[in-house]
Structures are given as C-alpha cells and as structure tokens.
Length: 503
Image 1 (cartoon, helix red, strand yellow):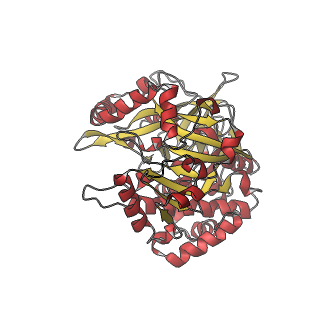
Image 2 (cartoon, one colour; image 1 turned 90 degrees about the horizontal axis):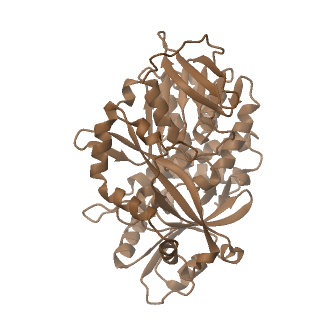
Image 3 (cartoon, helix red, strand yellow; image 1 turned 45 degrees about the horizontal axis):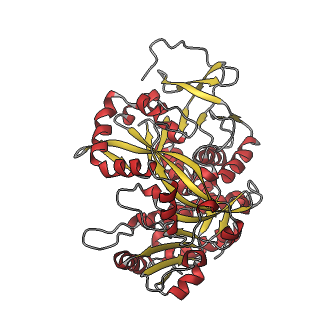
C-alpha cells in the first residue's frame, strides 16, 4: 500500500532499530536488545502523549497475570468430554518466562519496587450447574497433576467456598450446585506501571530516544534492505525521515494499518476485527473490602475469549479496586484513541475475502456483540448478580476498557479464520516484524519477543555471547520448563523471592 506521490527526504537519522508503539511489547524488545547488544541505537515512536496509554494501561488490560490458573477458555472441553490442558500448560510456562525476566529487572535495579506492578492475589475459577461442575472437576483432575498447577485446590462445599470468596457466597441459596478451584500463588499485574518502569530504564541508556506525540505515516523497504520510516510530530506537524535496519511494530490495534503500509508479502490476507470492552467498577469501599481474589467464570456461548466474566481485585497505583466484566462491545476503531474509519481503511483486496468468510463463520460472535452493545444497566446488573447476589446498581459505575483487534487470517478450508491470541508477522529477511492480536499477550510478552528475535536475529540468538546473556536474564532459557518439575520449583522460588510474591 505505497503512497503514489511520496516525496523522499534525506534521512535525518540512522538508528539500528525503530520501535513503533510505547506499550509492553516495545518496552520488552527494547530492553532485551539493549541487554544483548548495548551499543544499539534505538528510536521509539508513540502517537499518544504518554507511555502505555492504550492496551498496556491498567484499566484497558485484563491485568490477571495470565498464568492459566483460572481462565477456563484455556482448557476447552473436546467433543468426547475430555478437557484439553495443552494451551493452559503452554501459557503457564510462558508466564514463568516473563516472571524470570521481570525478576532480572528487579535484580538489576531497573525496577526498584516490584509491588508497583505485581502483587499476590489468589486466582479462582467459579462455576454453577451440574454440567459446569463436572467440567471443572475434570479440569482440576487434569491440571493438578502438572507441576505448574501444584497446590491447586477444588471444592463444592459451600462452607469452604465461603472462606475462599465471601462476597460471592454471601446470601447464596444453600441448595445451589457450585464448585471452585483456587490457586493461592496467583498474581495481579499493572502492565501500565511495568511498561512505564521499563521505559524509564530505557530512557537512561545511551543510544535510546523516545518520541511521544509522533505518528509513523510512511514505511517503505529500500533497495538495499533497510527501511525508510517517515514520522510526523503531531504537535508541530513537522515530518522527518529515518533509515533503519530493523523495524518492530508493537502498536496494538494500530499494528495492522502499519503492516499494510509496509507491504510485505507475509502480511497478505491479514485482517482485523475490533472488539471494545467495558467494566463495571465498584465505588463502594465496604464492598471492595470484602473481595480479595480474581474469580473467573465460564464464558457464555458465542462470547470471545476476552469476554470471560470475572470479578477482579486489582491494585491500581497502590489502591485496591474491584472490577466486573468485561462487557464486550463493537466499535470500528482499532485503538481506544483511534479513528472510526480504522476498520474500513484496513480493507484491502487481499484480505476482503478472509474478512467476509470469518464474519460468516462467526455469526454467533456477531450476534453476541450486538446483544452486549444493547444491554441495559439492569441487564448488566443481572450478570453481576451471578457473582455478587446482593449487588446494587448504585455501587457500580460503567467505564470503558481497552480496544482489542482480533486477527483474521486466510484459511484453506474456511477462506478466513478468526484467531485468538497474539500473532507474529515478519518479513522473511528479518528486517521487520509486527504483532497482531490480543490476550494473553502482555502476560506472555517475553516469550513472544524471544520468538520475534529468533525469527529476525537468528544467527545472533545462537551466538555464544547472546546465549550467555539470555541465560542470565532467563535462567530456564533453552529448556522446556513444562517437562522439568525440579526446575519449575527452583525458578518459581527464585522469581517469587525477587518479586516478593507468595510461594
């Protein structure tokens, strides 16, 4: 998607790396690259006037520290009734990799106080009805055999459930069929604070410059493999051109238009489906005090994975908050601070058929989103009452959460397929990479970025020098944690001590 009449300016700077977007992904790749190669020149561009103000911000992000302890959508039930735990095990491993890197940042004093971004909060799954209780019991039986889920508890006893989640069990009918699992070592994460701390460290490093209120308006591959990047200062409207060896697009919902601008073969056929979200936020301190857990339920039929209902204790800037949701919505914007024309402008000849096919194959999702948008405050209260039986409308206020863009990609059988999770799209020569998609992105950010580096800096990643440094940052690097119970225990003990978490 090239501009026909683009005027080529002489590049005003020649960074080694350009990072687009000031969220958790750019912060992670920036810090890892600087640790591996301290002399790299890195320039970071963010269109908003603050860091981590989109998907990484606390109110815009699920914040659970997705470790698959409580999210039932990571353990789907197969047609034969078996519960598939493979995705949960993979996410649990990726989360432990992230924790190792964050511990390294604390050890190196890049982050002074771990409680600014991570705190211990139990993770619970909660279901009702015979069928769901049978599913949760199967899930518990399978997961609790694995070392990642050691210490998981299960109960159907009302008296025990009352100890675990008093607010949810208050005034419950004693004959109701209920069950819950509990992992005491769950965490709450403020990804906004984590991202800001990481950028503070980056800012102090030689060869790193961060530019806020700057929009990347043009991207083009040059004859000899470098990238021409044109950036506009949104305050002065001045434009400048850079030339970079490597470009990383970690701009959340803004990644797809930039990837289309880059016009690489590997990006053909990709589209995006925007989904917005809202939280009910509790304003009654007495109610907030009664809940100190993250309690996840089961998604309703047709709901996207990020709409799994949960009653969520958060620590946001030192203050305890209580959120319920998220309620899904539909907006044509790709970013919370984006344009209503984002969806329309993302349509291209190569992705039109995959987009239409994915829409046709996901009619229940479309219907679900329309129903969610049309919900009245009373209907939202009814959903909340399944978790908090005596909830009162006046104690809760509706607030906008973040904007997500689900990936749509070409599919041989269906024409187009809606993908959940994070997708890496990179040029074969490794000069550009972009991240598309959503949850559990932030929690698994370190594994995702290591994957990007393997694709784009393959020979360097295999060099003795980089390997030694990677092992220092992530002690389990190169080893399958999932297959090594002793190493899981060792790594968890070390990271939890450094991050001051329950073990």
